[in-house]
Image (cartoon, rainbow, N blue to C red; front, side, top):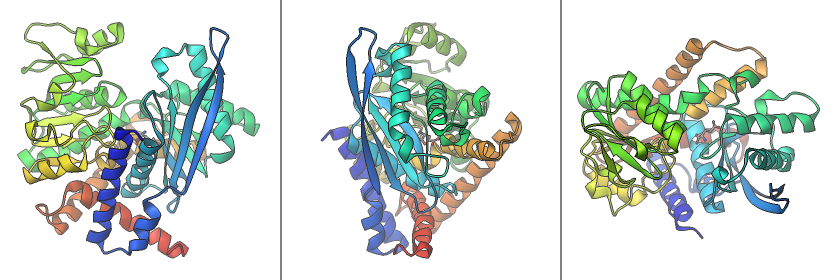
Length: 421
Ligand code: GLU
């Protein structure tokens, strides 16, 4: 069992247990929500460019559908494990419930390094995965989307493959598709936008505003880049960014467009060079003297070994599961606010929901109207989480625990009226 997946699942289940105690829900709720309803394993043969067949193993974990169809991304990463996928699917159930979406939770994964495949091999694999899962997904059954290592192009191949099998166009079976193929332009930046909105709202409470606050971002993919972009737009000063190869730090603030250009050209932000800027490691970015830290890469990066070195007062989880339960205890004890994944990075799946609604009705909103709808949903969640946190006692419980109680409440009530418990 991989340590990464196991630790993450353990942290999720610990929080679930605590939320059930705090909310006074029956123990049966833990029995049901601590395991997925269904786990699907697929083995996908792909003819590689050298003529040989390679078989890739993948999963789709359908965690719980009390509130509606399973919903969550698909991860392409060489180190995925079933344990990690179960943890990610479990978080999706709570994320979707917390944000008031009519969805349960699910997550898919394929053990592959997509950067090592040719475009043709990647297309074959994506289509193969969609084919293997076709009997188990659908707009009212299970609706996948991108996650780490997957993107709108991959969704386009998958929706095309599924539509061929169905014998008709089925736009609502995958979300975060390219705008030309029933997607919405907001989806590209929606997760990062949501991270920035949550940071801005929390900063208002902590300091009266985000303007002038310094920010470090770990991860420069779809989430990290767009979070930095929107935070700058809102008046914050992004002083450090890092990707898997390392990062760059300038206490006066980075020129984000210039850093992005270097990343696109050379594959890493580490090659960015400008006066006043120095190189840092991927771990150092977490420990800089900043106001706000945005971990937007992978899970378990903030652990008990480095929690005490973190100087930020506000941590905004762009990634899923970046903080272990042990680290959270330490940081909460020090008065650090951690805006948890199921809240802070929900902009992606909330936007997926809006895209799905568009797809079901074959009617599309323009970019501004869509972003306004997205922001309204995020602000509503923010207010509910803060109220719940204040009610439960900000010194006694973490923001994550408050968010879990809020989420479990909806799932519990749905399971109860359905007669499951
Ligand atoms: N992968 C994203 C997440 O972890 C988005 C999921 C979706 O849009 O369904 O929330």
